[in-house]
Image (cartoon, rainbow, N blue to C red; front, side, top):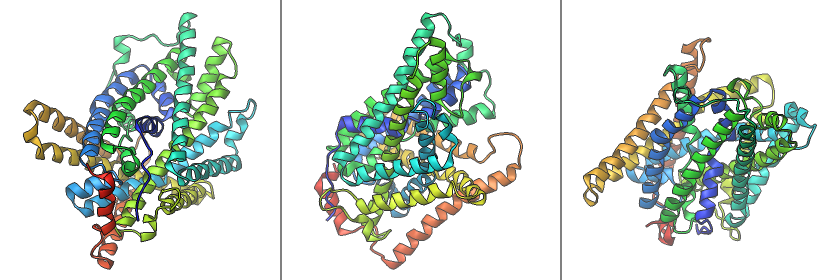
Length: 475
């Protein structure tokens, strides 16, 4: 029996999207490049975020089923492509969790005044990271009615520091002490070299993640309509957070003074000193920690559903398809996700050689991260062309064009990841490591798929998948 509890509504998905997508660190990184980051944010909005929103809205309406991108690729291109898309979506998160958890733990060290030295203490970081991980897992296991509040409160933690930053910026403007003067010339990029294009590509994927909530469609009330409304609202909120945060930080500090290592917390502390206020950086550290816990909970919950649906389809062990009889959650998939995340977290700490291996994995999953988006945009183009008879030519051209732009942006980002981000080092070795590692990750997924098909030729079309859709998961 694979009944899931439908408890997520528009408000929950809006907050889920915000906490999953907004990365506070991107605000510091963007501000450190100067006023031109504003136009780069807007360019990323037009060329990636809006096409992503269009694709996710229409795919969610057409195929509102648990599994999201896995099911979309499977339905539109076949079960092999579905498994590859789902596998890549799950695998790239293996190294995302440790980096997210470690950064959140480091920020947590700034909550109590005078305790910032803990940010460089490996034992503190490791212990806090593991606590955050398993608290997020625990809340998600006991049901979406409870688990959703990890993400909801986390989203509030996301808005808090931006509000503090905006207030500090307003005070600084009032005092006539703005560190940056905005003009049309300095807001526009002065050059479009490799560094600028590469940074812009990173900003595009700071805006990625609207598809994550759709992976949990079986737990969303009226998934198609809910995701559509939530995408509109959260899309505006996400763009506002990034733009307001970046502009406010530039008002307070010159780009060269923005600390991208310790991030927004120390930048807010610098603004405290300018305005004569106190403890706002400590409050911000607390709120950012809440946001990090919510973000970890969102990505853990979403990617665990990939294990759940592939378990239903018999590509992975059937035990992953189990739903807790009381809490109605895929508890086995969630706990397994926590175990794997723990192993990768430990790998990032233990020994120089192990840490080096972890860094190789980080590079290897860069391309893997982009592969599901290739499927998302191709699937949406396929749907638009198939249903061309029901809409005007101009509407069809707009939808297909948006998805095509998103596809081109994604492919551009994949190409850019093959080249070293900085001059120096051996570019051939970098390309071999990045491309070779990515192909290895994909190859592992393909081997698992063909082994499952050979062992069980009926994989991909189980009876309970039909039941899952008949419970209201299909439009």
